Image (cartoon, rainbow, N blue to C red; front, side, top):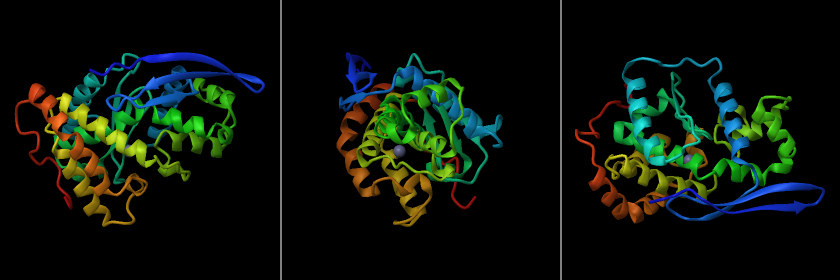
Length: 278
Ligand SMILES: [Zn+2]
């Protein structure tokens, strides 16, 4: 089983200031990563960005979509093992094809993505994928790379605690790094490595939660169909070609199937719940 452990902790002295640095391992892939931003700061950024992302949005707080999102969320979050996360799920009434998970487990799904998910298993995969961006600290890695552009650690700390004012550009960069930047106009595309990694971890999460993992491949097929190849919604335009990501999924599928067989939920979780053009 994956255990999220800090394998080394060091304080580096760089230039004028002291810089926090931790070496983490990414779930399942075990890639080692160096993070320059403390967890506490990331959790604060997640919390505040969640509030901003929901501002002025219509939320579905009852009904089938809401209930399904919460049920899938409970199952996926349980296998993601993040004791510091305070999970929340928002079903956003908006035709945009999008979904995200901010640090701390703040999750947004847009009604526009539901036909692509088609069923509960499809939702479990995309949720696993988005949760993986958060648990694999992709946002922290991207913010570390763009620290100078954002204006330094002080700016991030202020943003995390809700004090201090950000310029629209700084705010946009933070949103962009956390994967919710499409609507703000500043994109920091997740790299192919991050996307493939999120697919693999998401696949393992869905399988551990008891959802049939082969649905993952179908989700990217439906997404490709929707986007018709080259250009598509912001959610997809920065992602690797779907053939490439399906390759990684197939490579991990035998491992995912083993987890699934052990944790299999009852009932048909691939029964259509949402249809395109509906
Ligand atoms: Zn992604």
